[in-house]
Length: 582
Image (cartoon, rainbow, N blue to C red):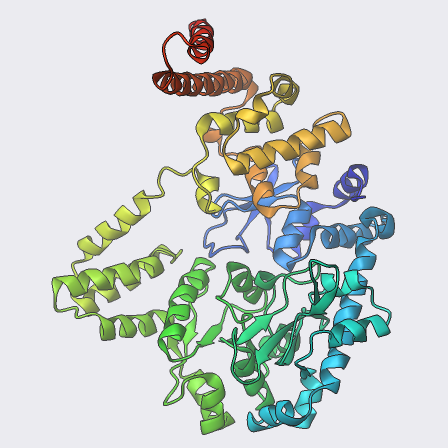
């Protein structure tokens, strides 16, 4: 059983959304609302609004929004339950998590316990070739113990029987991603013949493992599957140990791989983190921003590293962070660089990091002959995604001037490229563009907005059976959740519905509808919002009938005139015609 809606509403009513958000954002009163600089994108002018009356936050810049629960989920990278639990405790409301989760919290604890015990198993098997491998990489026994490194032997059921012997049920071992189930119901180990590296959450708990193959084989690195306690995009390797050092040093070093992070740490450099063997995710960038806006990237110097850097730079710029890039001298990666040059010289390389824009311009210049038209066009295509993410207009103009001067490109030509690129997304509504969604069909959007915002509309739409006519998958999901909420609670309240939404994307959409700009507020009663919804509903119905009419005509072409199927189709076609002409 989930947390009862009545309990969620009780906690939301008790929570002072302005007080909670003020712990993270400096808010100033703006009429009935409060405003501040958005913590979720590179906001320069206050576009982030908090409405205590509606119980929502919403940014008019990046379109992120939602309830007080959604804010904590985003800013702290918490689950919905964790946010509810925190606010219940903060405002003195009793919350029986065992009852609320239906044992989910107990399962979570059991998964964490299984992962901790797995560390003992891996540690026991770190002998022979595996231990020699780590020693050859300069990792001492002291650091092996400190980091919790281990080895998964080449066995099919070693972990299976070990966890059973320690009282861990197979279902929890599976949920932890340590074993897998065969079709016949038997189990086998997920990790085999791999150096094992614990992945910890920000509180230092082991939530997953990364396994590096020992010898030949693929994949070279294998991570635990995502689970109740582990989501790759919300986790940074080493952050638990680095967080205090980041605050102390004032910046973070971002590397690509596990052993890059481990190598720097064993050489006394603690303020270093890494994504989990995959491309950097936007959520990881936001996680970094919680601790610092000073980022120095030290990716591998090969082509794959450059590609990863090209993907990462726009992500940071989109969050208002201009990272710096470290040039590795004669080394393929940070691990090799610090092994070759030592700690002090490596620190000097980091201190001499150059702005990411300059680094990228040098890279483009080395690949494109900017003395030719073709080379200039290639250079523009390479740099456009980065310029487009620079939020500050003054900084963007400065970069445009720098690019034009360096590549001898006319400024108006570059700006025309940028305008053309921006125009591609001009058809998107503000919230859809901000959330990276496709443009919602206008009529379907009107209907779902009406369901959520206008009293009594949801009953009429359900009665008309119109939900099946909503084709957009995001709107269909939102409509289904609204309908389920309505049925469970016997009534529909948009504020309570927002508080129930765990999905940050859906909560942002609803918050944007609840807090529109005046020119977008076309569902106001004085504008006859109900009529707008029902007209949209009628157009959706007619489009569906016209589609069916076309399908019938196509089928009739393949039938023999006069046979039974032809007659049935002709009768249906006439019936559709009468309905459409009403």
